[in-house]
Image (cartoon, rainbow, N blue to C red; front, side, top):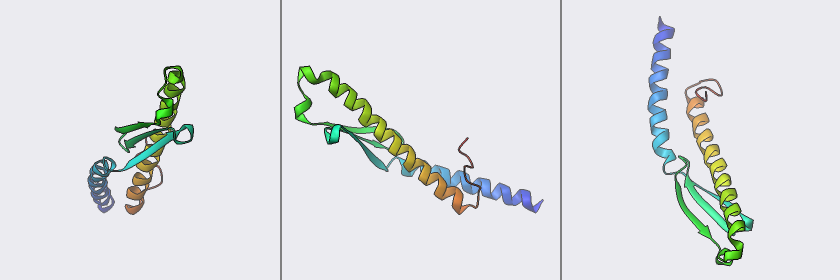
Length: 106
């Protein structure tokens, strides 16, 4: 019975930590770049895009397709970094609670 109560306490701690982490993820920002820095996408670890910067040299009608490709690449780079930041936060939380690696990553 003591083990069950301990598990319930750990579950409550995990829930509290997860809520705190969700709030923190809104303030963690990453930047994805492409084209050697010609395009940059800034987003939070919650995947909210905050800004997009485009080098003026790409703002030509004949460069539209290149710009579109660079935007997709920069967004993908930012998304990967945001996912890595979220994963890092999750590992920090589960590690502190003594949970096995991958716990809660469904």
